Amino acid sequence: MSFEPLDCHIDDGLKSLLGKWKIPILIQLRAQQVLRFSDLYHALPGITKKMLTQTLKELEEDDLVNRKVYPVVPPKVEYQLSAHGQELIPTLDALHAWGIAHSAHLAHKQHRHD
Image (cartoon, rainbow, N blue to C red):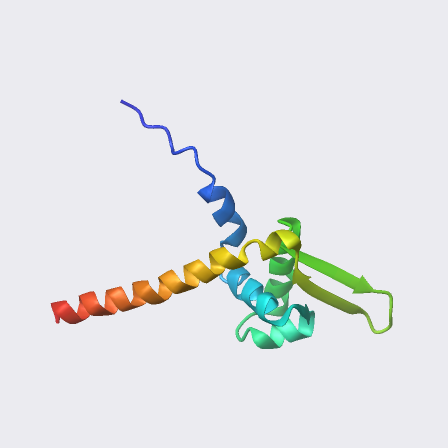
């Protein structure tokens, strides 16, 4: 007997969010509305400029982030959540709440076994 994978789109959604820095970037953009590259870089300790550039490009390709370039010298580039990215806010809030509950659950479970 063979089993077909579930025909759901959870994997499609997760592919756009997987990676160490995608969710932290989305959270920063949610909190601040519009940020420049340097603002994001300083708000995310441990990220390299190369990784930030790569991750922003991926988020932009997935239409979760908008990039706006101003024709000025020195160059000015701003990032913000796209309308599609803003649709993720309730999901991120729910995942955050679940993460808190899950951490408490695991701590309680560990305490019972000690």
